Amino acid sequence: MKKNITLRHFTIFICVCEENNMTHAARRLHMTQPSVSQVIQEIEGLYGTRLFERLGRSLHITSAGKRLLQYAYQIVSLTKQIEATMTSFQTTIPLRIGASVSIGEFCLIEYLHFLHTYRKQAPIFSEIHNTTELESMLLCDKLDFALLEGAIRSEYIITLPFMEDELIIAVPPQHPLVKKGRIQLSDLRNFPMFLREEGSGTRNLFTHIMEEHHIPFQICGVYNNTESLKKAVLAGLGGTVLSRHLVRKEWENGELGILYIENDLFHRHFKIAYHKDKFLFPALQDALTICRDYTRWFPGTFFTARS
Image (cartoon, rainbow, N blue to C red; front, top):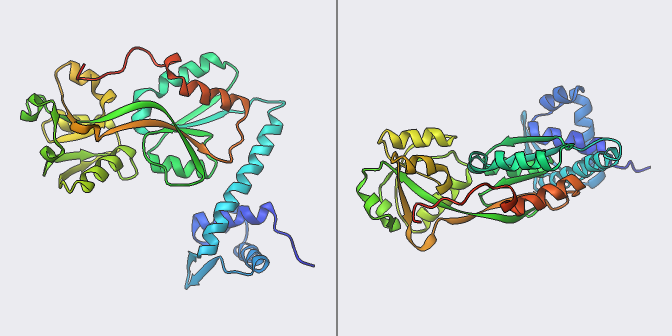
């Protein structure tokens, strides 16, 4: 009699993929290595295809394995959502919200404060990562939704714009380009720049546009937080690219100069992102609606040095 695949099969398969090693997966699952190997062999037997190429002690996932992994994540995620939804009739489901670094420093706290006020009984957990990390967490159902500015590659994630933004080049206030205000992209040729880490939506947009227009520049440092980037500029070491909203205080105090790029090349939208198969339970629906209507929770006016 042919054996049916179970949730246990998918859970073990996912763990092996994430660990890329049978022994490590067994340790994480509190199983023996032969038991884990047997489960993988059962899945391969059921589907009649190899999920991994075994080269010595190394595992290399096959094309079939990669496709199955996508489905496995969805099945495990949906099972968790079913359990959470059924449990929600007795308890309150916590909201898990992710935000990119730019949004985290600009407006996440205001949004969370409004949510806490609006839904006093709904527990909320939030964390900040770069766009690439947030995308991975959404695919693995480690977040209910995320607020980010970078491009999403996965076809399994829905994105909705909720707030406009623009990148600027922050430089020392005495830099000669500051007098121009708006500059050509070519003015940044061979410019010394301090950038966010790879995976940052801000960095990805900047480097993509510079490469698209064949404008070389110098990378003088890579930092994973805004404050370090601003300190490098304040010290006169070079420029950096940031959301215009993150330099308001320094610009008003005369500590930083701001350069806008002509033709709105660095114009972008902040986005809400969530898995297309995500069950939108009531608290999540409310959170998404409130986020899109940001005038309800965002204080004051938007900053632009050109106004």
